[in-house]
Amino acid sequence: MRHKKTGRAFSRPSNQRTALMRSLARSLVIHERISTTEAKAKELRPFVEKLVTRSRTDSVANRRLIMSRVPDEDVVKKLFTVIGPRYKERAGGYLRVVKRTARGVSDARKLAYIAFV
Image (cartoon, rainbow, N blue to C red; front, side):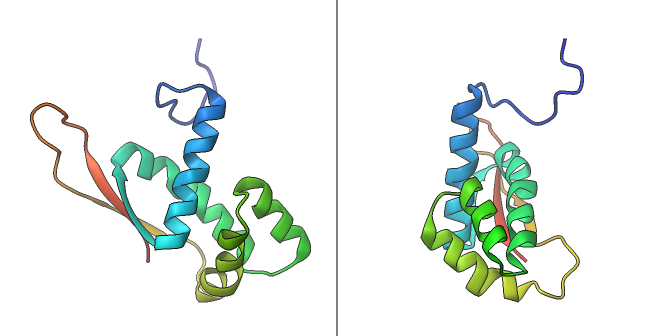
């Protein structure tokens, strides 16, 4: 039974799902806009928005929490110096998912861009 199980599994074990989210979050913070499937973008949005909310106030505790979620010092530095201050006054909703056209006949997955607002 699947009671109270939230989130998409992406046909992967939990450690691969965690690695996928970390990798997508890292790419999104570095490039500030990435193209991926719609399902991955929708799953990535709350993951990154929580990181941005933490990065709005710079403290050692917040830096360590974000480092535990995305273990990349360049990403943590950019979150606290560029992205966090940018959204200091914003109440939430830092990301937007824009749907794209489908790939084609053989692979009909829905694509989307995810980018900072």
